[in-house]
Image (tube, rainbow, N blue to C red; front, side):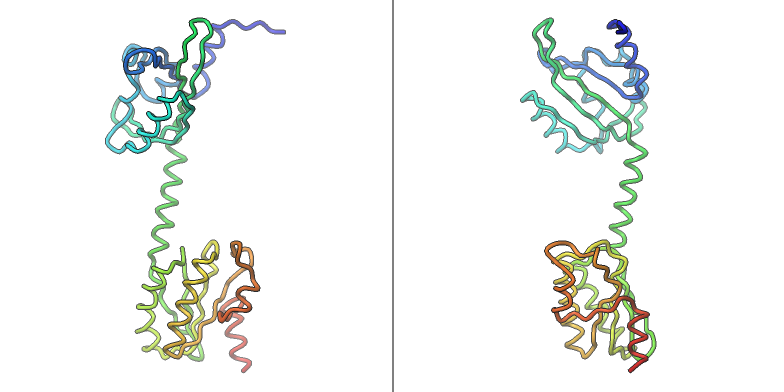
Length: 257
């Protein structure tokens, strides 16, 4: 068995690519008593600049205050806390910090310390936030009605289908249906991720509106894997919502008549 001393383990922490900070909650304001090189690499702060200080100096203008409150509450009970929080480097550059804090009992002095492990996840978080922003934009995209053959129109929906959004779409469809004399509207849902009860009810609302103005609605592009329990395909088949596998299939059926 290989014998490795404490110094080796301590030095090894500097090569992990993560920041490690130890604080002492028995002292006033829970100050820092140790950091590794990873902490300096991430935050730009050196040992002599942080010893004796509380970690709050990493917080800034856009740090989530509610998250900080939860963190404080958990630490006051000596609990474990894990979060992703916006912190700031010494030069003011914001970075996303994947932070885990654990209480650790030291049998030598019979004291409990907090060990914080930090990881800079800015690159991943930036991609995630950009994705969420894109989804939000999709949810507010207008859904134009595209006139096709035989008084048929198609309205592709991208993003979430909610009652609020359908209410907006209902207003938008009134003029388009009247102007283009559309008697059958294919509502294509192939670009939405799933169909749950709220989506189903929203589509029913749109169906009822279109029916009231003499336009037949057909749901197209719905795949069974889009359905979320407790919905199933039988629910659609037995409802007043008509469906076709695709707008192309609908056009072929209309041509056959």
